[in-house]
Amino acid sequence: MFLIDDILLAPLKVVLWVGRKINEAVERELHDEGRIKEELMELQQRLEMEEISEEEYKEEEKELLARLDAIRKEKERSFSKI
Image 1 (cartoon, rainbow, N blue to C red):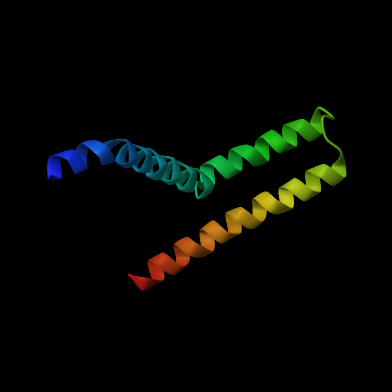
Image 2 (image 1 turned 120 degrees about the horizontal axis):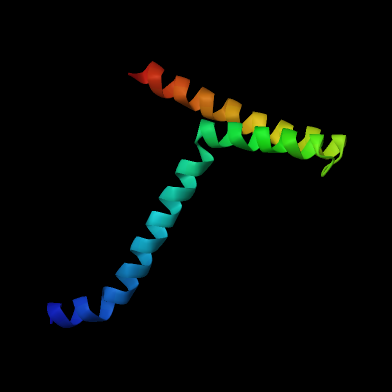
C-alpha cells in the first residue's frame, strides 16, 4: 500500500520540491545586497543613456534603496540576536 502511495504522490512531491527551490532562489536574490547594487548601477546607466526619465530614475532608485536598507536592518537584527 505504501509503495502505491509513493508512486502516486511522486509527481506532486517533485512539483513541491521544485517550488521550494524556486522560492529559495527568489529569496536569495531579493536579499542579495550585491544584486541590488548592480541594479542601482544599471539604473544609473539607463539614466545616462537617456533610456529613462529623471522621475523614473528617482522612483526606481527609491525602491532599490529601500530594499537595500531593509536587508541591512534585517542583518543587524540577526547579528544582534547572536
